Amino acid sequence: MEETPVQYLLRLHPDQKGLSKQEAVRAKLGKFGLPGHHHHTPIAKLSGGQKARVVFSSISMSKPHILLLDEPTNHLDTQSIDALADALDDFTGGVILVSHDSRLISRVCEDEE
Image (cartoon, rainbow, N blue to C red; front, side):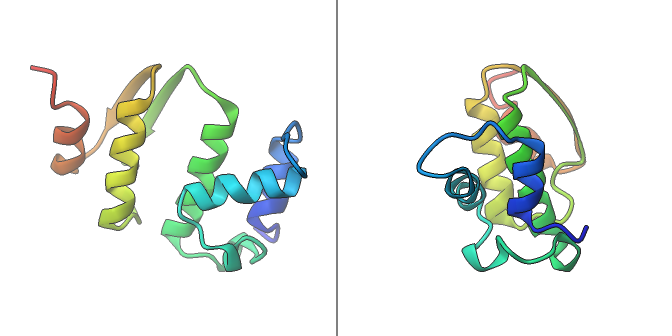
């Protein structure tokens, strides 16, 4: 928890490419909505939602074929839930979703009967 999001992601995903590995990681964190001034803040000092953004960044960087999400909306604001729904819609792998958030379920499963 004393690592910063950048340190954490570089440790877990050292194979980053781009101008620099650190810039690639920071771009991914930014894509998931973690403001730049938090990229070098110890994870222990981040809010629950900010920690979730770091975790979602890491999941994305590992390029999984299947996602098992248990209450993924905990600590997320409305904008983050919408972004998660969009990301799940674009995900081409399998998704197992456990949630009490009816809005997320209806967004992700809107084409299902």
